[in-house]
Amino acid sequence: MIKKQKQFLGAVFILMLGLFINLATPLSVSAEKGTESDPYMITTDVTYAPFEFKNADGDYVGIDVEILDAIAQDQGFSYELRPLAFSAGLQALESNQVDGMIATMSITDERKESFDFSDPYFEAGTVMAVAKDNEDITSYEDLDGKTVAVKVGTTGAAFVAELKKEFNIDVNQFEDSATMYEDVVAGHSDAVFDDYPVMAYAVQQGLQLQFPLDPEAGDVYGFAVNKGQNPELLEKFNAGLANIKENGIHEEITTKYTGEDSEATGSSNGFLALIQNNYKELLTGLGRTLLLTLISFAIALVAGVILGLFSATSNKLLIGISSIYVTIMRGIPLIVLAFFVYFSIPQFLNIQLSAYVAGIITLSLNTTAYISELVRGGIQAVAVGQLEAARSLGLPYQTSMRKIILPQAIKIMIPSFINQFVITLKDTSILSVIGIVELTQTGKIIIARTYSSGNMWLIIGIMYIILITILTKLSNVLERKMSND
Image 1: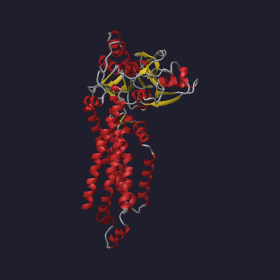
Image 2: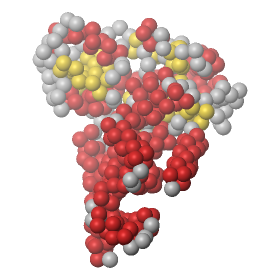
Image 3: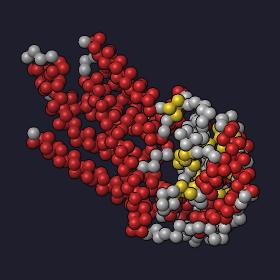
Image 4: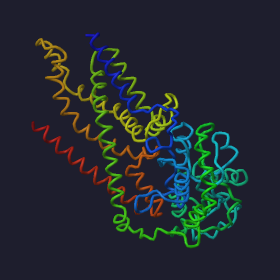
């Protein structure tokens, strides 16, 4: 009996290890890097118009994206964009999950200690903005006792950190610019600091902000690779940058977004107009959310049932394995687990994981712990006397469980399983931090283009409510059907 259990455990371990190895891609230096079959992975923050954002046609555009594209064409290399929040992009670059980063990254001495930078491709300064009807803040001295919004890891945040040494300032930190701006418009923060071209573009789109002061002296933006990594990519970027500056393409791109006749979205941001203009993008995000949930839940269901059965046996080893797993996984916040899987594991094992694979692993590991407990609770909810009666009639343990206990326990578990499915579906929104463009991240991208957070979050909320209501009704139907069997 014990021998069979050990063999079973060994088989499960080998199966899971093999699955993980197949999902991961070993890091290797390839002579063919930059080809269509093995493109460079470049991360960018796609919520930072006019430098990088998604237009109404679903294409990534903006100064950074189009400069990178022009350089890639000039130098003849292929690349793939990986959209991440700015701070997550830095972590991805540090952990070699991507080959380079272009995201209005200011070249500073501190960052030079961790990254190698290209020649500067744009110059801009940090500026302070306040709400359009705010006449109380006209200087940095007026910020004393006020709240300021900044974006994590930016030079704007560093500038405010210096101001805090002189004035009593509370700081609200955000991962994306659009949410940060809306925080000021809504009155939660009194001022915001960000790069001038970005905020000027947002004001041009109708954002209710104003600039009481001129921008600070300019920072220079550079394309970055990890320290000592991908020198050939940096050389190609510098060579291509010199060429597009010489032939006028660089000026053409920057003028397109920062000149007096720069492009505006020109679309209405009303509730119905947002749905009409973005329904395809929203439905795609919803589809990814459902697919991510279904795959993760299916994996977690298999693993969770196995661990749940472990905890229902009298074998101390199996009970210990199940207990340790559940304790660890329930003790780790999902966002921390997501960062660990996407950034830490690749560093430890010298492999690359796509964001989608990392998301599935994260959700599966987390959901497995909760399903395991549902299985254990379902089995324990069946009267102990039934198992004892079956064993006293001479039935083996496995047969007693399969024929007597589990059929009753499954009826008890079904509503809880569907409830856990709903929780897993909502948890997918957290995975936007590692760049998965599911429904919540889709909403962020649209907001970055339209600066209409109020209506867009209402639409996203309604979509979640409709989907979850349907699942809840399904749960009720299944529960009634199982009760009548």
